[in-house]
Image (cartoon, rainbow, N blue to C red):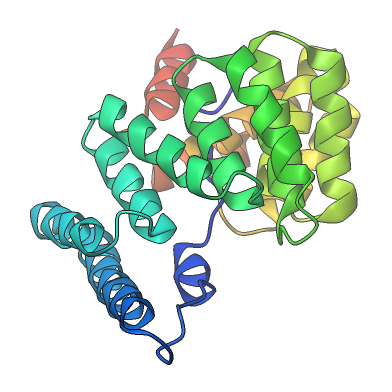
Length: 257
């Protein structure tokens, strides 16, 4: 089963910190542009802080103000796109992801972000070229994310062969890529290969970020292997950590039959 969430792989704090500002010296126009961008940066940072605290209305106000100061400020478009997606205004989210990518068409981050969003919206074929564009950026700091995101989308086509290759490429760059580890475990189990599936899931589990999907997958893998004790260990963790999850409810229903 594919995870419900595609991880949009961008560190907004790094993105904000890494943006260059216009120099303050020289003619008045340059100074004005610098002041506008600085104001946009400050309001974007405030907007992100409110977003992280769950104060979405105030966050939206700050981000709109940031764009009023500088409509070409990429981090503001990125953060407001995340916010709009969170509140279900996907058309507006897509507009801002596309605008960020239009402003920085060669950026690994803007291409990856737009690709992830399109894939999540079911526009899988359209999303895939953006991951290739992200990987073409020699300065992109997390290319493993683009490989794993491409793999997740390719599973939706479905194209399991290409997806597996891309997940393995992601792991060659970052052995701790959680999406690649989980998906390879899931794919290998579906292929009737529970032993390697178990190995990949154990690597995922070692990251210390279990999810309802990963614990349910662990239960299925160990059950297939005939390891009743290990299967029950996954089941107990699932029921303890995520008692209200669909996976836990499904496991409880299955166990009672």
